[in-house]
Length: 347
Ligand code: SAH
Image (cartoon, rainbow, N blue to C red; front, side, top):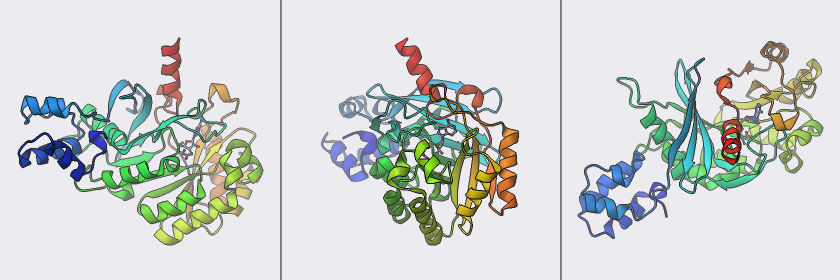
């Protein structure tokens, strides 16, 4: 058991076992909920801090950080206690700051255009590790004056497939939205999935206020299966049914991510077929010009072209936008910074 994963009761039991007065338990809980390590729990006696340090913390530290001179986006590489490295990104918008968090070290989903999955999934992240990313970012980039925190929004769109780490992700969502924790509104949190259909239905029950994003990337099963192996298990029809169930249950629109890949899914006929698929569904399409990954051999499109595709969808009454490009100059795309650093370390 790790400190950062413990419930309040588990913390009380663990601290109580060291034979200290009850008020100490409350102090430890408060520190842990801020992601603070035992050695930095400044209002505790030294010998108690030393005892607490005998239990592993289960958090992350900042291993590397790159700041985009263009838009202030910060790409973090976190180090976990077992030496694994995983990415996170802080993006600044006029309405607040969004953090993009990873849910696994690597990924097992095998999408053909994605750098995170090239070496499979090393392991899933625990809730305490994901909470620790937030705490580390808040410490690294303190809130502006008068603001309670730096991070106002979270997207689970880093490396990994969140629904392939279901229980840990749902525990993370509960804790990050709780008043005792960072208290971030579920409406300010998006979860992006490649489309593990049965888990989408579970998520609708367990976390209905979280915004659901689905990586669609194609309108036909033929192309989607080629790009995303998960489509062979859960084809488009099933993905769209699950999306409809989410919209019906929550009254909120589903966001479909669609990476534009040159010559693959980006023609006007593709826009037409996509619009036909989505007609009548409460949804929004987020267009992303593919960020070409060296190892993958797929082409991107220009932003100007992405805007044309967007107009084709809008002309067919499908709400769509082109995703703002943040941190492209600092390898903001999934899995790219981690790969670069791993390649450097391995020589
Ligand atoms: N596993 C989840 C979340 C992680 S990826 C999912 O599949 O949704 C976040 C988004 O980035 C997904 O839509 C993913 O398909 C997309 N993505 C991955 N690699 C990309 C690339 N090279 N260029 C553009 N988008 C990419």
